[in-house]
Length: 245
Image (cartoon, rainbow, N blue to C red; front, side):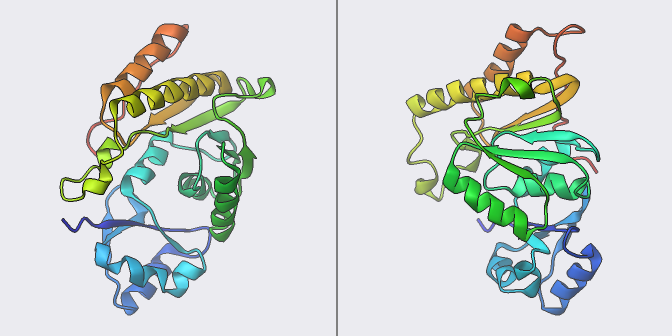
């Protein structure tokens, strides 16, 4: 199955329409995405051609899945806000947050791996995005940061069941019940840390690329039970199942 690839055009490095025209002149056709003027879909066979263009070298385009973009769309960042990307590496979502606010926000991009943070710094720089890189376990938010963020993105590490392919045994050969349970424990701690970090009235987006209840609904249920649901606690606002037009 030749699934298409998502392509994001980066307004922080150049005019979107000009880049689209340039790719077309090179014979790289792309299909518009209704919900974002800076998003396109290309045939997977065009991926290598994209990486050989001037637009790629200059950071004007980046290969990024539509589902990755949608997590940031759900976050709906606004200029002037203080925003935390709790599990940020490799940096694609952080860079998109910066692009959506025109680099007019205080963005903290956190990841526990120093190596991944170094790579993320390089990616963010290439895309001309402004963000502060922090290397620390996302489960532990410094007390000084409690209640200070307008929005927090928790794109949690997960077992990746949404990426399994029946024609690719390698996509699921490392999955195990024990591994999913271990990840669920980490996800719980990450979401609880995000709740500590966000200000009253702020927004948290919790996202995964997996399907199991123990890594999704169960995580949210535990957080709502612990911190309270309703006017004095948290309110759950599910994203619509359909992609917005």
